[in-house]
Each structure stands twice: as C-alpha cells, then as structure tokens.
Image (cartoon, rainbow, N blue to C red; front, side, top):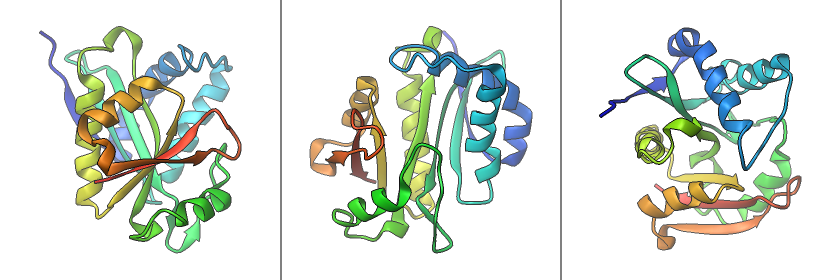
Length: 190
C-alpha cells in the first residue's frame, strides 16, 4: 500500500518540487478531458505564472507526494481580490466574474478564494489522493479565514469530490464562464 504526504505549497516547497510539479501538471492537463498540447516552454510558463508569481499574493496551494518523493497531485487557488485590488489572471475575466459573484456571495468577496487548479496524475487516480488533497486544502483555506470557495470546471470527477464533502445544501451552481461557456462557476461554503 502506498503512502502519501500532503504539503502546503510555499516558496521553499515550490523551489524543491517545481520540476516534479511541472511534470505532474503536464501529465494531468495533457490527458482527457483537457488534452492540452503545449511546448515545454509554455508548460513551464503556465506553472511558473500560476505558482511562483502568486506566492506573495495570497496563493494557497498543496501537493500530494508519494513515497518516492514524486508529485502525484496538486491543488491551488487565489483570492480574486488581493489587498483591495482586482487580480489579473490569464483565462479569467476577473472583473466580470467578480460582478457576477457579488450577486451570490453574501459574506463578501474578500472571504472568497478561487480554486484554480486541481489534478492527480492519471496512474495515481482512483486511489483517494484527490479527495484527501482536496480535504487538506479546504481545511487550510478555512483556517486562513476563507468562508467560500469559487470554482469552475469541466471535469465531472471534481464535482464528485465536492459532492463527497459539501452536500448540495452547501453549494450552488451560478453561471456560465464569460470566456469558456462550457465551464460553470459554482461556489461552496466551508
């Protein structure tokens, strides 16, 4: 039986595991349902931009590590606003999303974190790693003072994991993403 450890992603952990995280990220997002095909340089830029450049801006992430010290899963997110400023993110129309979210988020957008990335490498899926990683990350988010998690996905497995921990009474499907209408924005309460 394999054992896994779950780590909070901060700058030192990112430095130590960046290459392994890059490999895991590429393995996850080049597989279905995404099937992304990028150059090595673009994969590197995607992970670097989504992690290192956000560490000082409320970045909240975690890794699942196997007994061989490989990254087998990752999850991270960011506040949509940081220090009162609207965050800029590639692939997210943040001002428009904030306007739409404000219709539904009663406790204030400053208590909301955007769950941006989540994945488990295909050979390690269906072993409970994603569920454990999600539960670990959600506990940390709650401990940091977040009350609401906003997310969008096209992956039905993500919905199953959310269902497992947050019944339908604790979450809502809200609206289609302005840039990617196949993705539905949803929230759940921690």
